[in-house]
Image 1 (cartoon, rainbow, N blue to C red):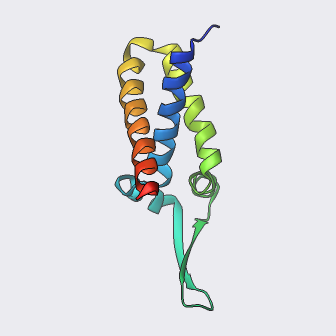
Image 2 (cartoon, rainbow, N blue to C red):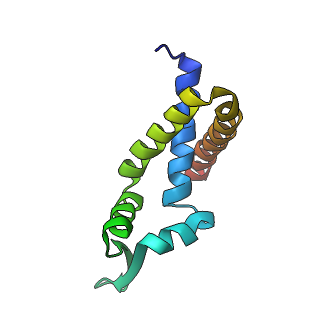
Length: 116
C-alpha cells in the first residue's frame, strides 16, 4: 500500500480533529457523559480540579477509559479513519477533507491565541 504525503497529512489532521471532537469538544459532551463521570475537587489553594472517572461496567468502563485518554482515542480514531479511507475512498474523501481543514484551523487558532 502506498500513501502520498498529502494523504498522510489529511489523515493526520483528520485524526487530530476527530480525537479532539470526542475527547474535549462541548458538542460531544453528551456522549462522554454516558461513559465518564466528572469529579470536582478543590486543592489546598482553592483551585478547582476536575477528574475524569470511567463509569462501571465492561463496555461503559472500556469506552470511558478510552475517552478519558487522548492518546488512546487518537489511536482508535486513526484506525477508523484509515479503514474508512481504504474501504470507501469516494465517501471518505470529503469527510476527511472537512475534518482536516477543521483540524488545521484549530491549530492555527491555538497558535494565534498563544501569542496574544
